[in-house]
Amino acid sequence: QVQLVEAGGGLVQAGGSLRLSCVASGRMFGINGMGWYRQAPGKQREVVATITSSGSTNYTDSVKGRFTISRDNAKNTVYLQMNSLNPEDTGVYYCNANGVRVGLYSFLELWGQGTQVTVSS
Image (tube, rainbow, N blue to C red; front, side):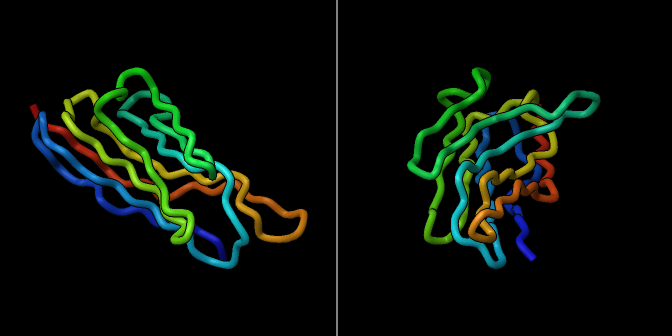
């Protein structure tokens, strides 16, 4: 079974840093895009950052200059380094992987279980 497992959430004071990681495990032959999304209480899930298999990145405006997404294709892992955190960054962070090749013509989209990030003021 192919799945995503996240780690690294927690409680941090405003101005602090956290690093999230997400590992894709199971039988697969490659992953196209990976990314991080978040959902704050009472709000819809929103994209935070994405990265392609070749390393091209995109960020939502509110995290530009503070967050950095990276990936290690050999380890099927994506990271999110979060610096200068503020209370508005609080939420459940979800890892996403799309274009996960599990067969010659078979692709999946996967979501992680979510990890809580809480930033106190």
